[in-house]
Amino acid sequence: MDNQRNFILAAVLSLAVVFFWQMLVISPRIEKERAAAEAQAQLQAETKQSVETTVAPSSGGEGVPAPSAGQSAVPGGSDQQASTTDTAGRVEFRTEKLDGSINLKGGRIDDLNLALYRQTVDPTSPEIRLLMPVNDENAYFAEFGFSPNADAGDVPGPSTVWTLTEGEVLTSTSPVVLQYTNQKGLEFHRKIELDADYMFTITDTVKNTGAATIALKPYGRIARYGKPEVAGIYVLHEGLVGSVGEQGLDEYDYGDIEEDKQVTKELADSGWLGITDKYWATALIPGGSFVAHYNYYSNGRPFYQSDFLGEPITIAAGGTAETSSRLFAGAKKVDIIDAYRDNLNIPLFDKIIDWGWFYWLTKPLFGVMNWIYQLVGNFGVAILGVTVLLKILFFPLANKSYASMANMKKMQPEMTAIRERHADDRQAQQKEMMALYKKEKINPAAGCWPVLIQIPVFFSLYKVIYVTIEMRHAPFFGWIHDLSAPDPTSFLNLFGLLPFETPAFLAIIAVGVWPLIMGITMFIQMQMNPTPPDPTQQMIFKWMPVMFTFMLATFPAGLVIYWAWNNFLSILQQGTIMKRQGAKIELWDNLKAMLSKKKEEPS
Image (cartoon, rainbow, N blue to C red; front, side, top):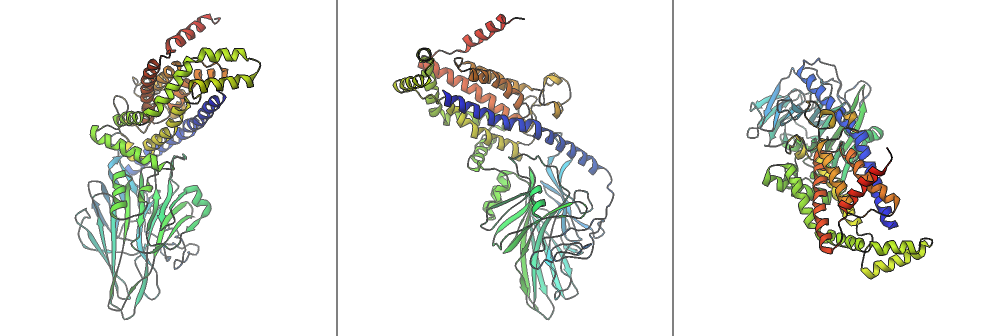
């Protein structure tokens, strides 16, 4: 019984830490992030003022000299500043999932919106804007070019003005071609292709019309100005990310890279690197061997960059050479990411979605949930279906556990007699208890197994609901319009009758309908058992449903729905097994005892 009590205490305290962190830290941050997104949407609707902004440094790796003060610095460095206007013109791109444009100055992909995703659940709210030009306060762009070579003359970089030679609008069926010729007779033709999802393919063909052989190193970079608002929760990585060669997954939070400044990886033959947000990401996929860098600089405001420098390509006099790389820029939708990993052979690319340490459980759990969703068309119903399947999967273990608990209930009078008989001799009491357990084939810790099983499933489901874009703005029924957000109802808005949402700072006292349902089902489940003899256990069983009700009020509604439904199924399962075993269900007696105790208390 001591072991069981200690286990329950440990489980409750562990969950309490997570819940209070969510309630007191994460929810205010999410509210702040939402307010920032609304402010950004308003800002985008207004006329922007141009701000002189230098292009910040690159990694300064081999063949990429770090700039001196006042220089801009792309791989190779450049003394010119990025233009704050689009005088070179732009090439529009448009598909069902993306819209935006490419700046002909630098050939930058720096204007990209996600056509299928809105900033709020309101379908008329602005599209998610992922990439922005350098003159924007939150500049975020991708760029490809070549590291400068004195023998080669001016090579494509941030200041290069390209000319559109083929195509008008980039679509999934019509590529565009840009052209640039330098003073040394090098002709650069850049073909840009875009698939039906979120992958750009950039192919540079270099023709050497000069008299000397030239070697050039291709580069690619993703640059981001300003430190973005992040959730700051340990179950989610936001920041620089990649997988380079056989070196595994790289994850650098913004704070981590600010401390490290620069991280250089070993030469690799394959891999990817970029910057990830909760639901969106950008990633470079080099086409050949490369050295990867993760960087942080500050030239008046924070600047983060993931870049690669490729192995040199050699262009003989009169010859031609080609190099190709890819850019992913879009939503981290599971089926799309998995298809890129498999079809394009991009190792570990599926881990750009932060499945976490429980990858082996979290991703299959999502897979089953998504399969059910494809059948029923509602992720809330899919959560209910997954819960039923989990109950079926763990039924033998749960059945054995509840049967053992039922036997313990039947042995309760004998256990009470042993305690009374050896009230002053705890060692003798324990010895006789163990003999009773052995005789009746009772496992005193059996009641802990359902809780123990539920904890990793709970965290994995929490991860799925919290990090997968499929859950973002996914409705259930009634007032639940977003399973990834907390239940918006509470007694403060009369459970949704008044037209306003509960402020985040009041979430600790504002309990919605689904958290109340969860608390009630948890209370009923606990009252089906006899009152524990230990005062500590009595206190835990009495206050745990209340504590969990308030804590889960700040959690995603999908997780609360899962917990409430799981409690309901557990009540049915436990009641059936107890009845079959001939054990008394204590629910009504416990409720009567509680009511009687309340009446006896002095007013």
